Amino acid sequence: MRVEKELVVNAPVDRVYALWTDFAQFPRFMSHVESVTPTGEQQYHWTARFGPRKVEWDAKVVGLVPNRSVTWRSVSGAWMARPGSVSRRSRRRRKRRPTRR
Image 1 (cartoon, rainbow, N blue to C red):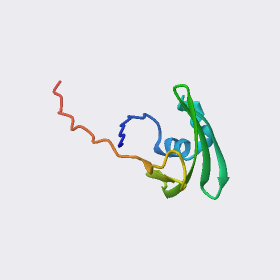
Image 2 (image 1 turned 180 degrees about the vertical axis):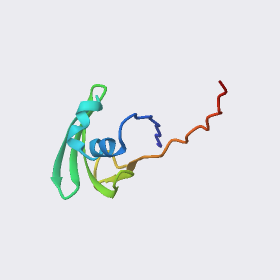
Image 3 (image 1 turned 90 degrees about the horizontal axis):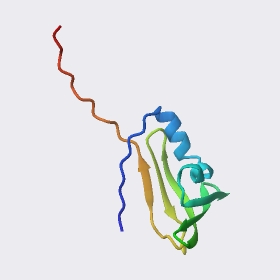
């Protein structure tokens, strides 16, 4: 299964990136995530609830590009054996037409 979602976030890039790399804060803005606990060097234990089902898995961050992207993969044997990433993409600016007064 592939899930893609695009969001427009009106905030400075460095603040957004800091939030996306502070995994323990995820329960503040992802309602299904109950906790994210560090377990080692760039490894985390996740607990989430999908409907009535509580699930837990371990994941490792495998790529960090400052202010650009975060990439992770599940640790072998994890229930949710999926890689994932979040990346920043610049919005194209629309050309403005000159206005006459």
